Image 1 (cartoon, rainbow, N blue to C red):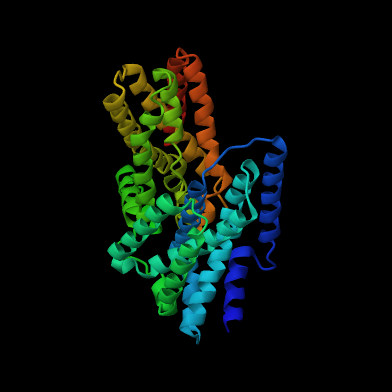
Image 2: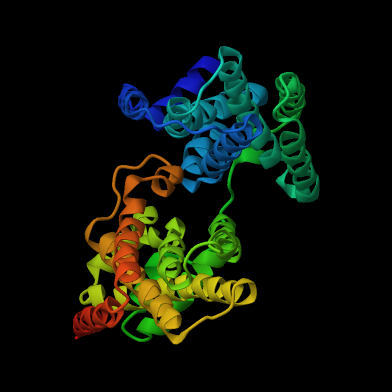
Length: 409
């Protein structure tokens, strides 16, 4: 029973014939070999590697458990006769293998190629991955008791920071993994089923109301959509925290030349840029109605701009507090980078939406997410080396806005 259930989940994640798995492993080998023969080496402390591997694996596992696409598959399994423990462990095992092999494997290949490792450290990293999977599943099961899960996570992070460099630290992770297994042993399969909230804003009825109240309806929809997806809000909060600490790391660098780089980094807010890709019903409804390239894209662009400019404002305020000397040119740069990244993100989502994804985590980690930040970094480099280019770029942005506005007619 457990083998059949695990195989069903694995086929959902890796394809009917597991065709996705060889491609992913081959890509990991290519990345490892390319970085290894380049001879680039970085000295990384043991506790930093443990924290990176654990946090990344747990984050991917949490996204997989929170995926509404997986909820439909799990619902079908729950409707059949099943044994709770076998269903829970097969479900967690399938998602854990997916998180480790398709996501963490790439990070592990990079770390393995750029730093020196001992065999016992490699075994320790494998234990870290398994521990992160089990603990993420256990905390997800205890999410009703969020304070207990928060204290548990805080305790493990503290232990990693203080004891992560000790050789016997893996024993502590094994003990904690056993504790997580005990929690999962008593878990019910329905605890992992994501119930649809009644507050979730349906895409199709809203889009059908576009002719009456286009912009207001869509802006309301976007903010309601963001409020109903707590993980999206968490990612936005993380970007705000990054905006707070970036001026501290940029303190020793030249003031104006590094500011555009900060704006480019803060444009990496993936969840708000994939609303069409993650909701096929909304995309179908929007594309079905006439004139939606203007009626949908302009409010969507405004929504992303507001999210971007909020992070940029926090960045500038933090810069003023820590370093001072925020100028009008910096403010204009914030407006330009926030609006330009919003325009590019909307155009990319409209003309090149992500297809063929298995779960929502694939959307978050799709290579397309780096296209706009890379373009922004190139523009940041150009502005940093030649600040006179900023007015020219603002003029080009005005032309783009004019073309986009003309599409509404």
